[in-house]
Image 1: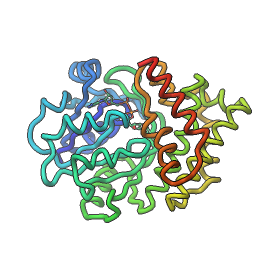
Image 2: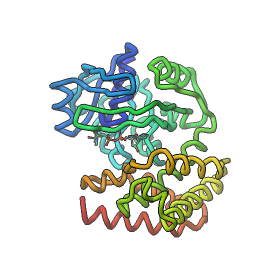
Image 3: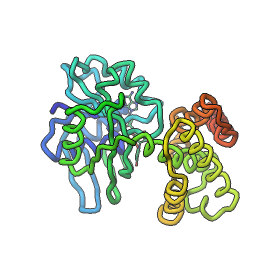
Image 4: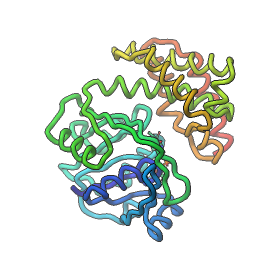
Length: 305
Ligand code: NAD
């Protein structure tokens, strides 16, 4: 299968490396000169629990490629999905499939402007990956991917896609209730990322402060109430437990929106914090804490980026 991974950062690098390692034909698309030059010069380095491996993969801007790909895996941050898809428009043929397991919501709708919904697979992943330097990613532990058809109608192609991810060691499962998983992760991210990005607190520092816990669980409750209003059978206790698990086991971690803010990069506000507040408005569910954080973070971003 001819695959392009769009966004060759932490997660795109992981998926590309694993798929290439399982024999797939994988090309990387990115726009960051440092990332492109590092991978061209030294290959993509992946440090995992089982040591380090380097993968030699083609990389460049979308314009460097021609012809239709069989599969586009979109792994930019949410605010870059539209520009990335627009630049890759010429690589989409009548059979091209797209996969998004990016965090947040709204990516399917953005991709749908370029590829019809019946050819989009959506889902979520809890694989962890960090870009430690241009061209070098670190993957501590492992994770899973859950996917389903974005139009709700599974096809043989969806099963093939999941098998391919499974064969690459990425642990894929088909999940008709994937929207529940997406929203539980969205609630988790809206809570921990938003507060961390606004306060510079690590996960452990949030865990230790009663005021921080109150805000985290307020955002979590609002997001889950919105999900319930959408008819999703989200599990409040399970999601609270996943936050408590992060509080106990990921103490030094700086959530990605905090990392982005500190580096002066845009944050995934529109597809995470802002997305919960917007969907709350649509569903008639009040989300005062989440909406305040979405506005606050947008103000930070306007000042910093
Ligand atoms: P990242 O910042 O490491 O990588 C994103 C890459 O996209 C960068 O290399 C950037 O240069 C590139 N990019 C930006 N604009 C582009 C464009 N127009 N065209 C092509 N490439 C472009 O981000 P990440 O951590 O890999 O996250 C990607 C997505 O996966 C996000 O939605 C994130 O929330 C989600 N996610 C991340 C993790 C994690 O552990 N890192 C886990 C699960 C989900």
